[in-house]
Length: 75
Image 1: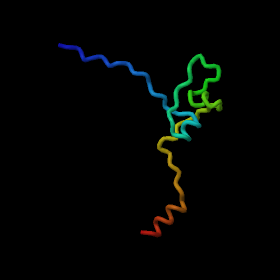
Image 2: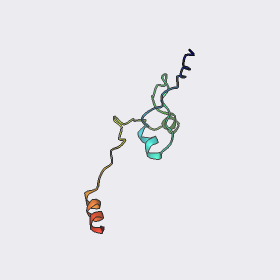
Image 3: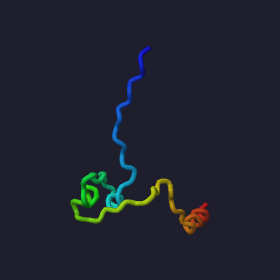
Image 4: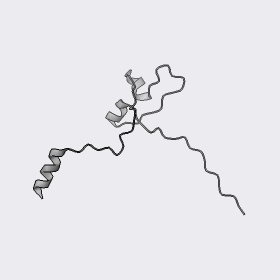
């Protein structure tokens, strides 16, 4: 029997972008471990403070009650 091919270990993609990169919708790189500022490449290039969100907002959509009422009136 032939053993299954081993999966190559790929580096995990960073889950959250910093606030600046998220706002501009640009690629956010992980800060270098030896970096004194611990900022991503985009923020360090612009000399901006690099802050990361504390939790993921994925799947959390704010619902506007007024808009929902307006949509119901159209039906």
